[in-house]
Amino acid sequence: MRNIYVSEITKAVKELCIDANHKLSPDMEEAIKKAKELEKSDLGRRIFDQLEENLKIAGNDQIPICQDTGMAVFFVNVGQEVHFEGGVLTDAINEGVRQGYTEGYLRKSVVKDPLIRENTGDNTPAVIHYNIVPGDKVEITIAPKGFGSENMSRVFMLKPADGEEGVKNAIVQAVKDAGPNACPPMVVGVGVGGTFEKCALMAKEALTRKVGEHSEIPYVKDMEEEVLARINKTGIGPGGLGGTVTALAVNINTYPTHIAGLPVAINICCHVNRHRSVVV
Image 1 (cartoon, rainbow, N blue to C red):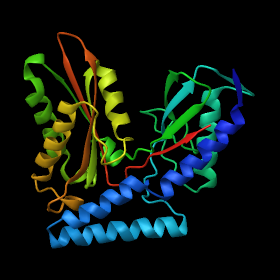
Image 2: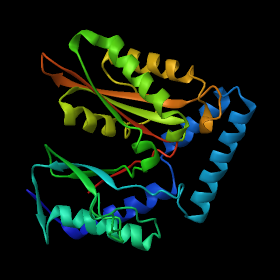
Image 3: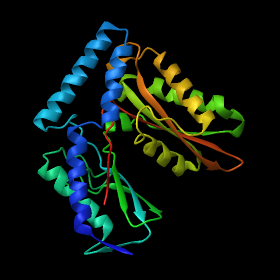
Image 4: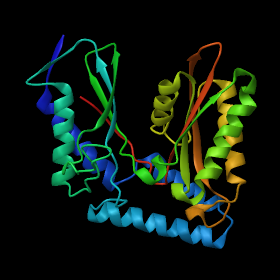
């Protein structure tokens, strides 16, 4: 058994909130660089130049990459041999968000009630997904999610007979419906299988996979590549102004499901696909 003081968690979360909003992960920076080389439109290449300049300014001046610094979403793998001391884990994570968004001068975008709409003032509470795993460590991944692209999310409860082609068509349709509203070039997270809520969770978590890394399941890898090609043929392009590159990646996660269903969730993220991880 290993004891971890929750103050360590708070400190780690605070730093994750600030770092994720000031600098994209290396895989995303490299993906944008490669996408600019593939873009055939003059206007599209100019947009990529602007994106790269924005990233450089944000990193050098320690200011947010995007004014929408997102709702703080966490995936937390908790080793079953860990014991927390000094407080409650969820409270510690929310305290880290409060400190990070306040001291980091990040925009606070969370309201206490979905209909009353009073701002909480510190971007809490976070959305936290826990998973119990072997070991004595805690892995925390943050994925601050802006709502321009979040609002473009879709869930399709397909019939089993729709099959693989139905899944691919659903993904492409979701991207077409999103169009410029998802701030392309985008990363497309997809969850296939499970239940209504499970496929949505898988789609969100798929966005934290490194761009360029494919599913280990051969047919899923093939789907990712085919759907990405189909999306980039839509011509939506960078900024939604037309061009060759509409999406940087399509990441698909799968899970066993019921004989009567084929749930599919699509969670789109804009070019500011922020994710950071730390192990405590």
